[in-house]
Each structure stands twice: as structure tokens, then as C-alpha cells.
Length: 158
Image (cartoon, rainbow, N blue to C red; front, side):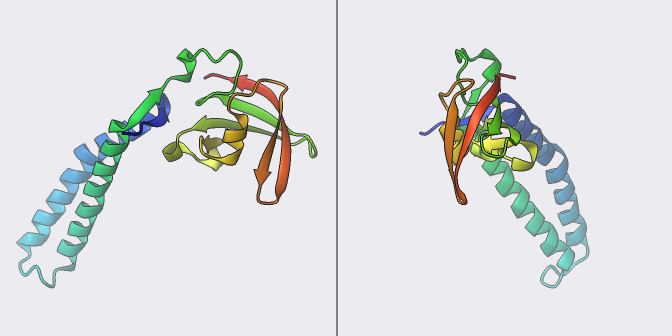
């Protein structure tokens, strides 16, 4: 079985969503189904069919989250001895050599990635280029628009 890396925050977020689905969403859907059943004929009952569809989606998501958590290798970057290198979970400040534009990314698992929030997947080209590098190293990232050279300005393990 392949373990999928996940940050502590990512695991907490998934656990919170799972708890919400099990303790709030699931009971609400069950109540909706019961109410719709009370209205009689189920063949033409749109309310019933909508509630069953919601139930199917919620149960699928519950199963998906449970699977992700059971296959997760939760990594606490604050406890990793990285010796100043970029590792999974690290937050890295980069400066594009050509444009001098600065960006900050945290390297996270596939399910946690959100470019809007500055979290990039461990499998992304930029993360793969950064892993194992140190401050002041220059990395070349193969982007769709061509290669981009970045200098590592800072690495944080938070």
C-alpha cells in the first residue's frame, strides 16, 4: 500500500470535514428522506430523489476521506530535521531571477494543494525542482511557457 504524504493541517482539515459530514450532513439528509417519504408516491417525488442524490454524494465523500486518511503518512514539518533543505511541508520564498518577482509556496500533498492559498502539490514541477535544495540555490522550473529560474530566498518549517 502506498502512503500518501499529508501535512498535519491537511489531516486536521480532512478530519473536520469528515466529522461535519457524519454528525451534521448525514442526519440532515436522513431527515429529508424521511420527510419526503411521508409525502407518498416515491416515483414522482423530486424531493425524495434530490435527498437520495445528496445522500449518495455525502456517503461517497465520507468513504473518500476515510480512505485518504487511512492511506496518509502525516508529516509534521516542525519535527523534521531538514538541515536547511527544502522538504515536504516546508514554506519556501522564491525570487524569479529574470523578473525579480517574489512568491511564497508551501509544499503539501496532492489533496491539500491550492495555488490561491500558496500551497503547491509535492508532485508539481516546481516542488519537484525545490525538494532537497538549500537557501541561495538556483533552481530551474520547466513551465509551459518555458524554463523559469528561481533563487531560494528563505525556507521555513512552520
